[in-house]
Length: 373
Length: 226
View 1: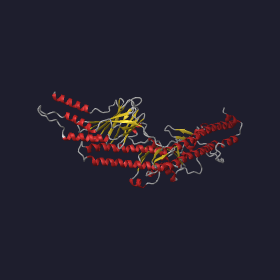
View 2: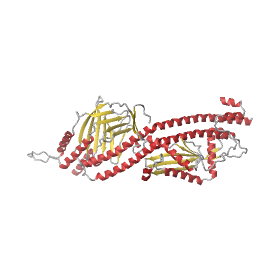
View 3: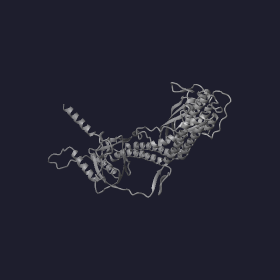
View 4: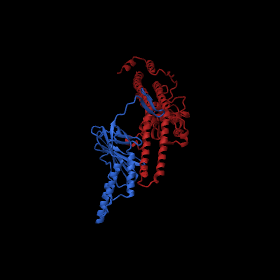
């Protein structure tokens, strides 16, 4: 028997609720609904405007280090891109006004209404390839697709938009594909997504109270078995806790915004270098081709040409390696400061989550016991 | 029967001539790297070969490869053809160019050795789990390995052109020897030259510097926060 449980036995239910409300004092208590209609979806919201959580991307760095050079993968840069690009995608989605709250989150949140994750397949300054997967709270896969964008020469010369750099079409394509999937689902299905999302969250936090509202199917999706009453006090507490957690999530999201504003311009300089490196490689290939047949085989000019072709290509590759380190020199401290702050927030949420979880289970037990007696 | 023997002999010679400079055994090692070559090295001009001497040796070697068709009373020395001589001279010029740097900076950690040279690309030898990973691009292939305590780097380019460097240091770690051999498919003989280097300490700077993308090189007498 825990200490809090012992205290709960001595308190009336309203007192317990008052005690619980003090956990999240920044939110006013909602008035209980008079009717007992079974729904958990918010009343006033547009059901189509689902909330979207975008996780930090998988950097797509092969575990085999020996492949990095061949695949032109700079692990440090990829780690930065993995944090930067989700924010650009977030802005693209948010700017359409078609979606609810769009947030960048550091970890997978299976209870999110729409969870978007991505892997950077290729990013070389000119071409960007992202494998994007979007799953809703019911486990329905909305998208699992490779999106690719190429910066045109014209755009590269005139682009001044930090952090986007010619790939806006790619982000727009993702958003439009999402909208297309949404248009194929009816309002009922979308409403279900919101309800399942809240109940998944509730069942994780208070499995004793909400564990049997959902059922998992063999194909991995989740269905509603039944709904709690709208004025269920436990659900009300869950919603308050979720709102509190959203405040923290929004703080984390703001950290990603700060990161973006601080390093986007430097990231653009890096990408400009990468573009020039690709141009240089093409120029070197042209030069080798043009000077190839001029000198007789075995002559000094011919063998020096062979040596120089290799040398200039290696020098260009080594210059890119150097610039990758230089980029990290500049943005590394900002990244690490953000990671540290996000980790603090996550730790806080984890601690609170454990506390909320325990309190809710004990409250449920106390309320059930009171009802039974 | 005689034809078969000739064919076997020819194929044996061809096989011998294709022996890799860096073989599989040299490309793997266990534990720590066999030698520590790290540091700043400056050329010791008092030691090593001069390019003319190396060219003379190679020319004499080339002359010995010419079939001797002189009669017993012929006093003339067999001379290589103009084409052979031109190929050898070309190798000598390239060797002189490649071995010109008077300072080498070698950095070494548990899995990579990097040899930086002025006006040339940095030779890099990377080992993953003790196995050397070669470097290649559209123009050539660079492989490396350890032959005992000697680091061997072999660059293979078109037309049979090969540049091989062998690095080893003295027992006290203060002297570095680099043997460079350049060969090509158009020259009968390779050209080899030895260079010696002495370790030196770079003077420490009173400035702390850091390279950045947006501000290039930033230096300060205090701690640098980008």
